[in-house]
Picture 1 (cartoon, one colour):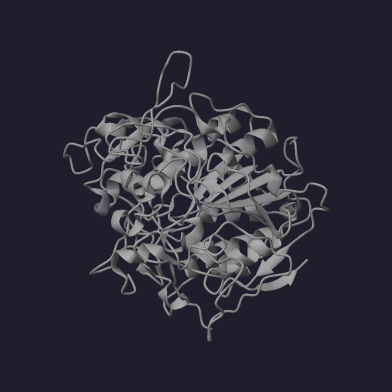
Picture 2: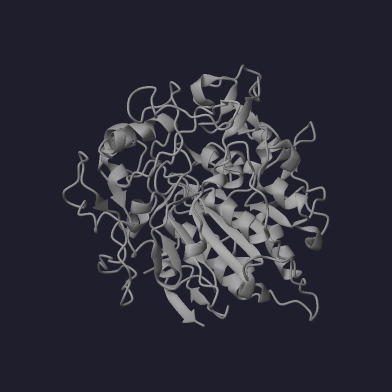
Length: 539
């Protein structure tokens, strides 16, 4: 089956044909001592998917005529999904779950606001999704289901690549967003485990007064971020025309970048479209790169005007780890160090560094908008192209034998998932709605001074998490409770770093170690076809 959009121009096509081999002796030497064989962590951070939205019937696919076939390996473990829970046809929601085909890959975006997601959970009954977070109607590809589109799910005939990786590596069926809420919330939790510490920038780019309502818990000017305000330390938050009326915030406190810097470890955030295409009259960077995928041109299908979306770039919220003017690294060999780029790069800088024999200890990869999987302007097929091409290329480097790739998501987009997670963070601001208006339990003090951090209701919705590594357990499903900040914990534990502190969820995050087997020989590789997602070679 042809899976490409006619106008689909793959941003990674050049990479796929690029030889990653460099002259002998130019590969970087082994990095600092670690507590596991892993010397390189690569985090692929995708957009807006609940676990059941991609894995509702795993490992059983419909295999309809004309679609890419998927058949599970013998002995595939059972996962906690809609099929095993008996919720495909006897569901408490007003609409039963239903299968979306590859032809329906480009769906519309669902409501994933902090309070509305809690309403959908209905105190754990998980039965108010169409009414609370479903998006349908004119201008929305709702496949005729109206708000019931939120109950749709894909199977291995569409998300073939991720199902294939789950068959050959390790997957979690019990990993959650650290808090309820949209992209900014998830991105901040990925790098700091703490959404508290936000301060509202008083004016929007158009000069009008900004408001904390929907951006900071309780509508305050300081507190925990609950919405998608843009980063205040980013030129492109101000030069993108579609963001002129958007609120901005800055963040205080430590993030994982600070801990890595303190130990002299190399790291970077690499995002599609980060490289400026021009400057405005004030000398500020303009991020105008854009691509066309199945959902259309990402310059017109979402508000951020192209590949680069500022509020998906979490280190830009923190002054100490930001690169406001989007300055490039001084050379491929400087990538990961503290130069003028300050650890924030274009995705192309990652591959330039790898080709030069320089893979940072920790790399966060963020696809350009069209390939990040976000409904409304991306889709699972364009997402698969990015994920598979990235992993195939990493497997072709000498770094693979000491690498762990972690694939996870920033939020659920509101898509139905049947499993509520532990509520380890309580909150009672007006935005909360888990058990009643204004209620997600009673917030607890984070320290001996009695300080509380409201607006951090969580864990939020369940989301996919897959570990791909020569040391990942094969065809394994981890049932341990983890969340986005578990990635921070893994990095901290691997390099012997301290916890972030000040209420960061890294202190209580579940470990990812159960997904690894470090007695393996470090040679396991599985190559997929980026177009179809099927396995092409196993080594």
